[in-house]
Image (tube, rainbow, N blue to C red):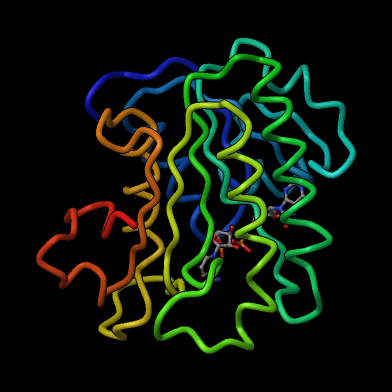
Length: 210
Ligand SMILES: NC(=O)c1ccc[n+]([C@@H]2O[C@H](COP(=O)([O-])OP(=O)(O)OC[C@H]3O[C@@H](n4cnc5c(N)ncnc54)[C@H](OP(=O)(O)O)[C@@H]3O)[C@@H](O)[C@H]2O)c1
């Protein structure tokens, strides 16, 4: 990262992408706090020496989680994509995190969204019905006045993949961590998939600025 950030709040750190984010930040010696729903599982998966705040982003009083926090990265996501989970979980939880981040005066909110969160060439219209709440969550962040970077990955894969529509979770995690401090990512939205990375205008880490 270009400069060492102060304390970073990670939301979604027990997830496929979030756990890579946690590893990268720990390796870089960045002070961390994690918002997790299950302390025992977080400690089993990520280690016992972490600063954990335990609760659900949908109803936890978030002020204490943001105390002393300079930046936040959220990979929060409902796995019930087809059952409306993005509308009942991702959108309201992200809106609450954005409000708390504004209250705390954080220096950067890095949000993991998805390709297809807004109408996008190559993404079938029916998928927009699932993904639109991600676009609405992006809009909440953009309108909040909180400094932000939004990353929209394609389909996530646990490990390397040649599928053009997909991207390795660990690459996404590196991009999210870089976006915490890169000056040229401030206020920007990027799309990141194997196809996007092939484009001549792509940033090799963050993908294509949209
Ligand atoms: N899967 C894909 O192909 C894909 C494609 C593009 C974008 N995305 C987006 O990329 C991001 C990362 O995806 P992923 O597959 O790595 O995620 P994931 O493995 O499903 O992990 C999601 C994380 O969010 C946490 N979470 C969910 N609801 C929460 C709540 N109400 N309060 C607090 N934490 C909550 C989960 O905690 P628990 O461990 O307690 O469940 C978990 O840590 C998500 O925003 C997702 O929407 C995914």
